[in-house]
Amino acid sequence: MARLVDVARRGRRPGLRGMMWAPATALVIGSVALACGQAGGAAPGGRGPEAAAPGERGASGASDSGWRSESFRNVVVEVPASWEPAPAPGGDWCAAVEGRPAAFPDRPYVDSRGPHQAVRTIACPGGGREPDLHGDGVPREHWSPHVWFAATPAAGGIEEVPDGQVSENGWTRLVRTVGAAKVFVLTDDAHLEEAGRIIASARRAEVDHHGCAASSPVQAGGFVRPPAPFDVARLDGVDTVAVCHYGLDSPVGSPGLLASRGLGGTEATALLAALRAAPAGGGPDTPDTCAHDMWGDTAIVLRLTAGGSVHEAYVYYDWCFNNGVDDGTTLRALTTGTCAPLWSGRVVQSGGSGAPFRVCHPGSVSSVNPAKTG
Image 1 (cartoon, rainbow, N blue to C red):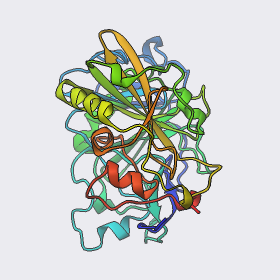
Image 2 (cartoon, rainbow, N blue to C red):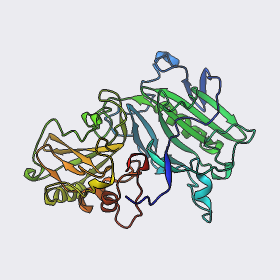
Image 3 (cartoon, rainbow, N blue to C red):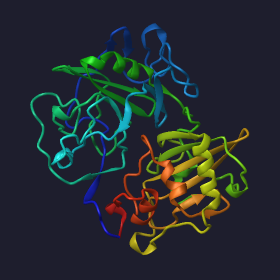
């Protein structure tokens, strides 16, 4: 399998490299006051920090006008609708900016880099005397207000960043732990009020706003099949489709949800038609190009809702064999019609075998996970 991108590690941004801060006792952002101790403590007014803030919607309810919900693990937060998903600069930022003056977002956004994002093995300059509120040594000229998430406890020996508020030279970082995740917001003074509302909105949810469970049987890995088989070819119609993206490094029963998105109307109808038309047998596969006792880092659960009934199919795309859409009855091949519509927003494919990547991302250069290829 050709390595089209030179990567040797996954980009993880659970905290801020080398930065430790004493926890703040409270955040006060405009009119928002929020306790920032350990999750489970009491917030002002007797609310636990995992309860909804005034004006919030429940995890399954609609967001306020001009806002939307984003989920990670077993946490849901409200973010301004104008803060669109985009990849934040990481430790390889200097390679990305070479010859590209607008390589990174220049307006508020939600980081779309997941914990399995590939990062180039390159040493970028950085690390001054000022606090690195962004992380990864990214220079201030590439900072923009944004939200990101991290699983907790942190993996890989990376330092935990305490909950609280740190400000320096017109920038503020807010951190709050809820459930199995930390929520981070980096903001300039102009967006401080929005940042306070974002961090206050974080609440625990075992099922998110798209109906995606925090944990799924798909996390068992090994290309497990859906526990409730059905035949997608027999579905005459679909009302909505939820795209639930899971990490396979979290065991079943623990939160593994990475992100979710919903399809409705003509998008959902087109996806169902493509699923019904996809040939049986799975693929595309190149089984001679990777280890046979391993599997990919991520998978998708498709929740197809029709007439009040919900059916779940598993989508595998991250390895050199067993790729396809599995409804528990038939494994169907990945096609551009079944795979390309799945990726948008924070639901991103950051690597995998080249053959399925090219089907799912026509016209894109594929990347692989060299740690698992042979």
